[in-house]
Image (cartoon, rainbow, N blue to C red; front, top):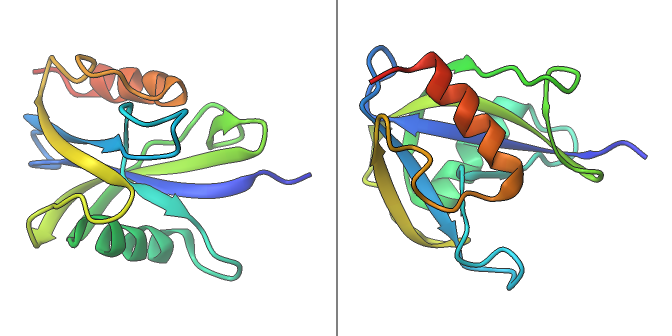
Amino acid sequence: MTPVLVVAAAIVDDLDAPRTLLAARRRSPASLAGRWEFPGGKVERGEDPQDALHRELREELGVEVGLGDELVGPDDGCWRLTPTYTMRLWRAELVAGEPEPLVEHDALRWLPAGRWLTVPWLDADVRIVEALAATHRP
């Protein structure tokens, strides 16, 4: 079975010199509630992954972003989240709107560089945060 593709954004204040990273706290399901993740969501059938990411960020946070480089994962270019889900992630910065937790989340937090691992991330996202932190030193 082919895993479901989800897309997400590592939204930072500045793509060239990031000082903060936006984390989103899950509202549901109960097994994930209270844990933090990158905003994004599932790619619909026939949808381009980057288009899906822009759609998801409008729906979830009410923002428009400019996409930077993709953080290519070690699992065939993706990040394996579970046996049934795989993720692609792009660095991004805001170009319009102020992020609000509209759908899947109950809180957002800007984490300062050097403190990106100070919230309880979803287990599958921890190695992605570590990879981001390794490429962006405060």
